[in-house]
Length: 145
Image (cartoon, rainbow, N blue to C red; front, side):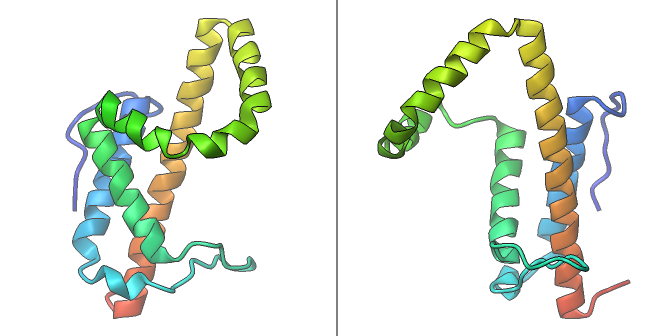
């Protein structure tokens, strides 16, 4: 089990990102046969199954952890990847121009606060998903402790 080695304030974005990376590393160590997660839906009590299976979550969580640990793709790779999605974005040009107008109106401090709080929420949610994937895998393999 991974233990957080760095000490930051509890609600610090770095703490949340470190916690996420540690939980995903634990998930990778626990899930020895990822293919068992294919076609297994993550169902919460009283709710319908979500669209993606646990294997999809597993691979997504691992990919995001690599980006958190090692940084984003180099600019050229990111632009090449984004260029493939450019055709889809043409339909959303009106939305983009509206978003650009709004972002110019907001001051930088408000933008930083908005993005940090969004990232905090996203990484907290992803950490919970990684824990759910581990729990479900342990149920499947009978490893509940």
